[in-house]
Length: 67
Image (cartoon, rainbow, N blue to C red; front, top):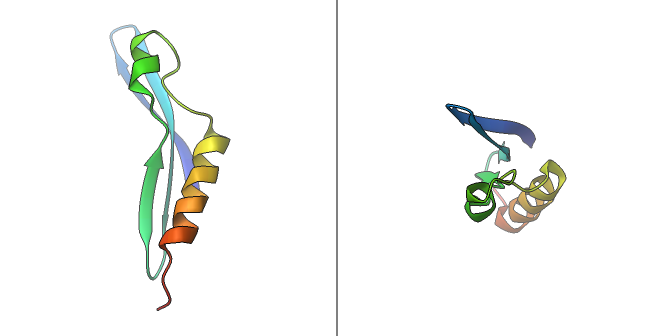
């Protein structure tokens, strides 16, 4: 699994959010930690990278199937 920070800018506004993804022989997925309500109020708009990575790992574990 890999995690990176995605960012979007418009004029002076900048929104950053962690994105984690994985792919293997039986599953793939992408998880982002964007909170639009927080972003609209001027917050960071996202969860921590660790929180998103942990949630993505849980999803990956639940989604895996035997090949």
